[in-house]
Length: 330
Ligand code: PMP
Image 1 (cartoon, rainbow, N blue to C red):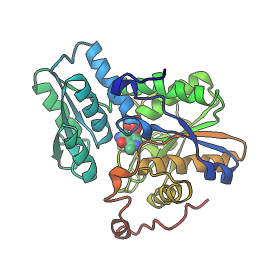
Image 2 (image 1 turned 90 degrees about the vertical axis):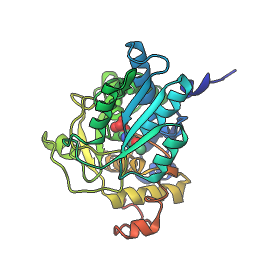
Image 3 (image 1 turned 90 degrees about the horizontal axis):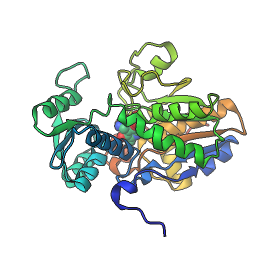
Image 4 (image 1 turned 45 degrees about the horizontal axis):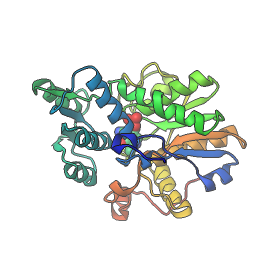
């Protein structure tokens, strides 16, 4: 018998998928970790589960307690599912520039969503800071603090990294990944570098983020934005990201992201969100640089269903000068 014991037991152990057309085109193995197949629909289910388990283990979260988080969506979705499964309340602070689909899903899952004005991190009214303050005031509440709580990264040190290593039998030349909190990239990189320091770790960055410059020059200087991507890019180096082994960075334009997402849909039948487009585009660039015969692993973060109103809305794209019919420039 092979039976999963409820929601939490279904988090992780996702398939590793060969992206066939891109592998053939580059002569490399372009492999994607199918994080969109987690039960809450994204890579962030792992972070949500590890953060909640960590708060319980520390005695901070008790039956009937509340989990508060500032999130652009997917972490909140993971947390909301797990709160239901474990009997906690869930309060989510979210910037008001995110897709309506994510707000609707969170409310359907039973989370209390507080939409707040989109302001920079340094502003005290930033959504993350508001979440932290609210949790500090409310009895029995914990702040998940996904950006700086390294239980997030640990999820990927303990699960995603080992799964990638086992699924490829250790045959990995490079790993590409975009960064929101940095939990995924930093956790996987820490694990893979322990196993084989020669595995190249490449940060994939959208416009409007400081991380490409940070990797290239050591200074977190913002690149021009904004970006159509959601959930990735950052103006600062989080505790999850700090001191993690990263070898290089690739910047992926919104047009390249869009072309990759639509190519994967048209040519391979996949329906992914924009961060997956960034990750796969970076994997292709690394494959082209390394040349045929290499294996590049990346993360297929979530599906496209939450992004109908923007990424899959031709009118919205046209208004931004973006063309979904332009193929990815190989
Ligand atoms: N892709 C999507 C769709 C996300 O929601 C997030 C998290 N905000 C990421 C990628 C980035 O993952 P991490 O927080 O582990 O850097």
